[in-house]
Image 1 (cartoon, rainbow, N blue to C red):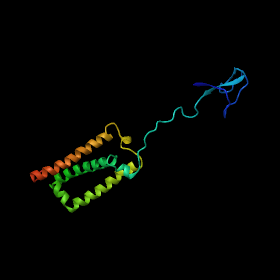
Image 2 (cartoon, helix red, strand yellow):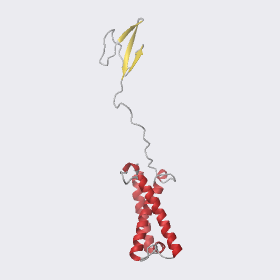
Image 3 (cartoon, rainbow, N blue to C red):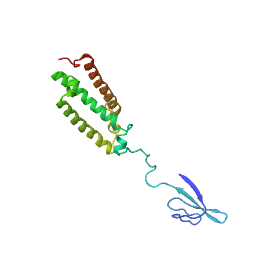
Length: 172
């Protein structure tokens, strides 16, 4: 609690007669013919303002910037879905990754998946949420980024294996 000496009156302060005390504990002191007022300053309301936390930008340009939160996260999510789907189709039908991409059905599913997953990833970011804010103990934002990176490498490895060997990764 801070104590100050004031020799002049100010708005909201009353000069009290010598020796009396008000409800805030202020009392006057004799000082060379002038009245001095001891004021105890207290804050009203919350004791300290909350720290300024940087709010996530909701601009599409900030979200989709090169260093923004969306590009790597969206590409990683698409790669995870694509890697699992490519392996499942290879195991089920025997079609390799490159033949899946060349078929009309594969291109349609690819376009549909990109549209749905991109919108589903962008909407929370544009509403000001962050992936770190919804993270749990095991499934956190950092794990998602690393899984996405490995899935991107996995897709490249599937394509490289098929190009080099001339056969799908999973030979049925």
